[in-house]
Length: 472
Image (cartoon, rainbow, N blue to C red; front, side, top):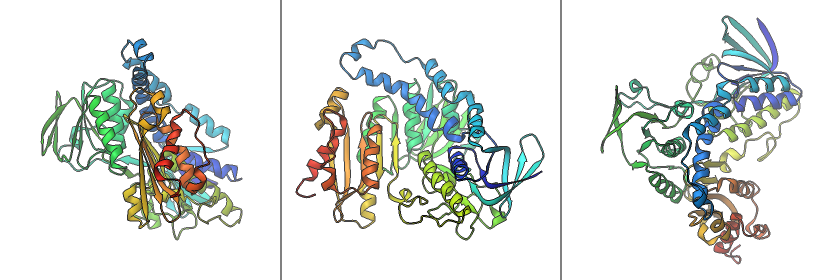
């Protein structure tokens, strides 16, 4: 069979769904090709199940840190109920609801593995057997995401380690778990499984959360240790052996025994078997794009989300998808693309205004540049730190609240380049910082954004006071 659509989208995760949806809203026809579950990694093996596993223990700890509720909390965490709630949030790994949404949005679905087979053409090996050839009138968008990277440590692959998929879908909690890695997945899963009752050891060769401000990483390391996690940084993993009783991990600092092992050392683009070589691109590598997410030299090919290697975050991939879907529709109508910085069709925020949250203990929320990254760009920079203990709202929020905020200021333009917050429940504060960074709001104007008292948002006032009104 051969079918023709305006847009073909390879990958039915949140990125692919958003590309197709924006294209359809722009008056085009679109089809998604998906070999697994519609909804993708985020819905079933990443964002949603991981945060569900983390939320119940977090809520219990929060209640125990406030006088009055602490005295009322006498029970223990119901691990079975936590896992059952996680199963509900993943729809028990069934995508009926997501498929219904595609139908309602007017987006076609072909189940199978798609590969580029010619310009504007995708050949799908169908899930039920046979092949279907799809032709795009205007664009093909590659939205295939990424896979967990497994490093070449002797014995590791043979030990059948967990990746984030196995960790977030586990139906039982192992008595002990060793985690190789120090990034977001490693930290969050160490937090989750320690909270659920595992004895967790983290082996982090390059330290924890090395892309974030060091003070945030230090607070997270302290938080993990308070949960009983054995955090070992600067440690090289040399070999892994699995036997009937679990795994033995040999490091340059000794051996670690555990019932299960999780490898969380990064991601790689899912681009090895999608026909990139047919169109002259390198399989297995990130697909380079311009800021409209189009592949240079090919007016019909786009790469959106993790597969382009720009920013490996679901919300940023969806941001790219909105820009890509809109620009595909505009170009199909013969309209000029809005390619000015911060234009409608540009993923400008990818470069210097990316928000992210680590749902650790405590939480870390950041947007824009760290102090070190800002200095590398040759900005004249000043960093200002404030302890949350100076904020009345934080003291009300939790007895003995511990946390810190930092803003990084471009001294020449008097605007924020970045903000990092570390402390319980700071995730909900970061969007205000994102608006300030993206909007390049002058510090003199920020003085007029008065935080309500007594809320944790008063940290903004404390940061401005520490910076100095006369300086702004």
